[in-house]
Length: 69
Image 1: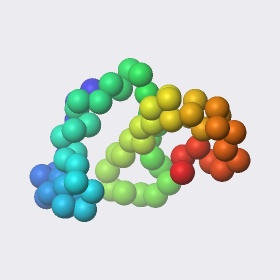
Image 2: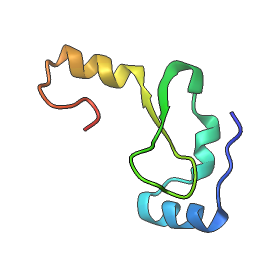
Image 3: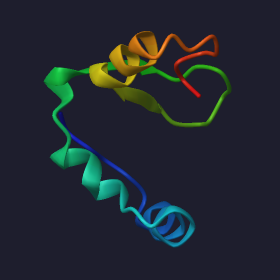
Image 4: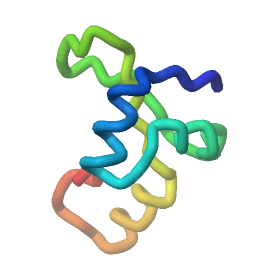
C-alpha cells in the first residue's frame, strides 16, 4: 500500500500522539481489517485499520461495548 501524507500533518501527529504517519507503511495491512473513514468530509481519504486480534480479544472477554472503543 502506498502511504502519502502531508509533512506538516505528520509533525502535528507526532507531537500530539507520539507516532509518525510514516509508521503506517510498516503495518501488516494484509492481516488487518481496514475501511475508508467516511464519517465526515476530511478533505482527504482516511483509512481506519484494526488488527483482527482486537476484535477476537473483545469477543473472548465478552465485552458489551463496541469493539472499536
